[in-house]
Amino acid sequence: MAQLQPIARRNSLNSLERKCDFIARVVNDNDLGWRAGSKLCEGDKLQVANGSTVKILCYLNLKFLDLPSGSISNAPDKCVPQAVKRRCTPATRNKCPKTKGPGDENGTPTVISPYGSSILNSRPVISWYSVAGADNYTVIVEGNGVNWEKEVKTATLLYPKEQRELQYGNAYKITVIASKGDFPVSADTSVVNLLPESDLKQILEKVEQINSLNLPPDEAAFLDLDAVYMSKRLLNETINTLKKRVVAGSSNPTLYRILGDRYLEAWLPDEARREYVMAAQLAQSSGSLDELEKVEERLKLFESLQQL
Image (cartoon, rainbow, N blue to C red; front, side):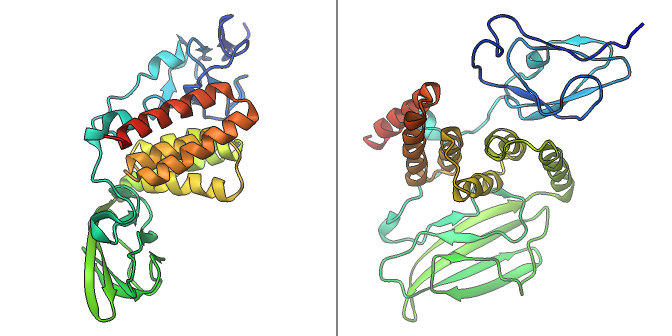
């Protein structure tokens, strides 16, 4: 008998005849008739050959799953949304950290990046809001095995090459002091945690799997790589990945919407609103009505909260 092949079965209301929000992607490359990189909608079914497995990335729970061989699985049913303990959105403002924005607290050099509290990069870019009238800034980084400071004139500092990199599995305090002449006038502190090496290895392996699929760059950034990074709450990595696509000239409204969402989770409302406005403009100009509706919903919620 012929070997049982993986098949995608879609009902008449699914993605072959209408647009849908994709909730998973087939990741592994195989010779079983199911193409790696294919996206799944709700209701799609995979029939997996005996002795074979199909790996999928679930966007709803941010997990990689191996579907068992010799069975017919309703794959998307396994992508149960994860329970989010703490997430900052316009509708859940009480779950957001202190608002970060230009001019806060009478000119505080509020630390912007690294974004979020967990990071992957051992030499992150450090940035903050500039303070009117400040002549210079002193950046201090301290923690296990690392203790240095550097004076700069601008509000961004590339991690100094001559300094020891942050050590995996440790927390570090970043302090920025704004000074006028020789006198400090204000300061801000942020704490970041570098993932353990075991988590680093897992994340890099998944990133490599995604990159091997040769997906459209924008789609890979806002769907797959975002899912991989956000599985460990790596706002810094996903924001920087999305920003690279913006610099590359992306005109995809979904990418700007997701970037806005991630800025909001880092509670950078001004940056979030900027990306939402751009997403709305691109969605309108491209006739992406579904995307425009999603962005306008965010802008309405955002504006209502700003008026509180």
